[in-house]
Image (cartoon, rainbow, N blue to C red; front, side, top):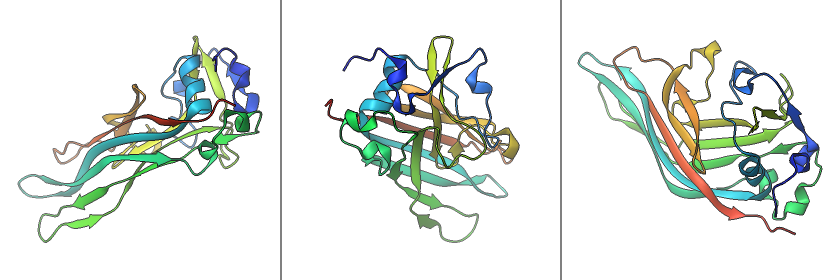
Length: 213
């Protein structure tokens, strides 16, 4: 399939703008941090049905007398297929819907350590979402923006204690990247206050594509 016409996006919605979409905040969150080529943007929406990836991270658990102790996250290599729009198996199923929403979840393990006592283990998710005019987003529209020859898709990522930038909740410390098909989406955590080092990284690639017909 040739990627030639931006208006063939689901929802038929590309908004040209003279303002950097990275400056937009919805609910305090930066949802448009990265612009990509038209071909890459259309591949994510039209072709990518599943992703395979892995990652890790750490956030402060407790501030002990000698040094901080961490909650440590590990996400082993696994595949995720969205149970929302990305579950559709054919590109033809994505012609002119009013919105497009994906949610890719990757299960992992977290070990929360303490200054004293035994650690606590639980099962967290790393995740990323692409969405175009999500009807559940009530604080503003989320089209695809065209700015300076690049296309911006609303994207939310989370790995352990790393999330999209949000100044409203002081999530401003750069902790790593959520890398999707070689494109880095920055992750942020609460700034350190106990000489701790928040870290969050995840790398995934498209591993299953839709049929072209």
